[in-house]
Each structure stands twice: as structure tokens, then as C-alpha cells.
Length: 225
Image 1 (tube, helix red, strand yellow):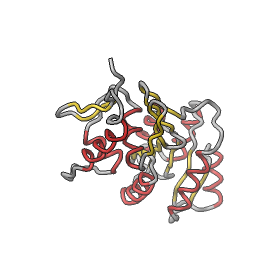
Image 2 (image 1 turned 135 degrees about the vertical axis):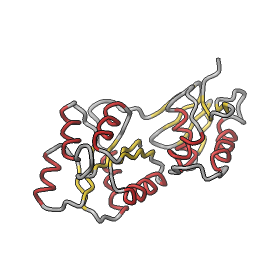
Image 3 (image 1 turned 60 degrees about the horizontal axis):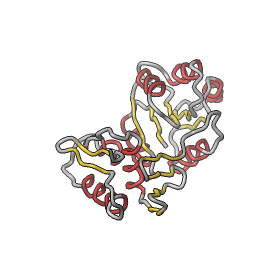
Image 4 (image 1 turned 90 degrees about the vertical axis):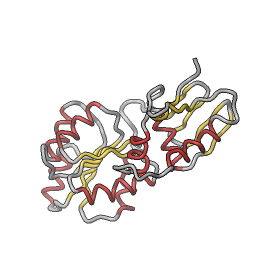
């Protein structure tokens, strides 16, 4: 899933991002409520985890603004405000769930999973197809020319990132940030290693290569011309 984390505490945000990324989710982090609202309105998001107290716009105002825009985006409040009145305010504002800090990550993950299972009011994309390659977002597998391709968590996340923007060049820096949660380039070859592994599974057994390297820019996946 694509998850927006709106949390102004960097330590908490780092902990949550790493945990969710390890489970195969793609997590974008913002520390400002107004930035969070803009992200939710103009970028594809499956779920938001929102702190109550943030600069720019507090969590309650953020969720109220989302609901006023007719967004049915699932929202989990994650906050230190623990009074009954606070929880009621969060749910009445349009939150779908409310968790109190400190928390156990396993419980947060369970609540994220539970919300992801709720029926959506509009049909949601469950697969992406480029040429003869299909990525199933539910089974987390790929299929090409009828052949099932099993993917490890990072391979799935990387392929999903590429296929979600066909023809667009995804930079190495962006891949490190989105998939490995690096905010800087540590000089690792992990991206190149995983691209190579993906090519072994996605391209090598077939006649046509879909994953391409754009020199000095990054990687892209596109259908043959």
C-alpha cells in the first residue's frame, strides 16, 4: 500500500517508516499538516497515519479538510492525546481509527492491515500491466506470458515503484529513499543489485527487455515500441 505518514517527530516517523517499509509498503513522510493535505489531495494514497499535533495544520483540521473534499481516504490517528474527549474528537472529525502513543508496532501494523481490508466505495486498482507483464498487488506476485514470478519484499516494492510510473525515469536517489528509507546516498550498490535480480526474473527468460537503465539518471520500465 501507499501510506502517507504525517508526523512531526522525526524519531517516531523513522521508526514507523522502517517498520512499514519492511512489510512491503511504500511510505511517504511529511512533518507539516498543510503538506500532508496537499499530498493526500494530489497524490495517490491508500491510507494516512496522522499525528494530532503538527505545525501548519493540526491533525483534526487536516482530516476535516479531507472529508470536506469528499475524500474517503482511511485515516489512523496516532497521538499522545489520550483523553476520551480527544479520541471522540478524532473519530468525529472523520478518523477511522485512533491509537495512543506509546504503542506497539505490531498493533499499528494490524490496524493498517484491517483498514486495508475494508471495502472501498470506488473500485481500487489491484494490478498493473505493462506489455505482457502484470503485477498483482494483492498476491504480491508478477506474471509474464502466463508464467508466475515470485518476488521478495524489496523486489516487489521496487517493481511496483517502477510500474506505477511507466516510462518515467526513477532516480537511484528516489529508489533509495522510497524503498530503503535512505535520506542520503550511503554509497551502497543495493539498488544496482536489486535491479539486476529483477532483470533476472522479469527480463532474462523472455525475448523483450522491459527494465531499462537511463545513464546518469536512473531506471525506467516501459513497453516495447
